Image: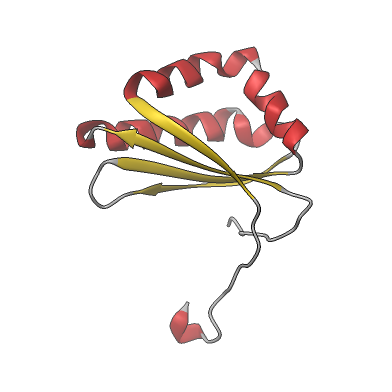
Length: 112
């Protein structure tokens, strides 16, 4: 299970992919498969979660890496270039590099 950690030692990415509704699940499935097969096994990977907007027009990826250098090394890996090309062909990726400042959990089981 992914955790949203406010640790200043982690590099956090929120990537919002604008996509046609008929491509939303296809893109999500692609992102999940590439993460399962390659990305999660790379040095420095911490976690990734994927979200579908209810209007069908976005796929949102929340990811954390041990460091920006680890993230940049993943992004430069030639095995992933076809993945990035595909994402750009079916969507409009908007990566946002973030600092997590606060994270809250439920205070009771009913809230979870």
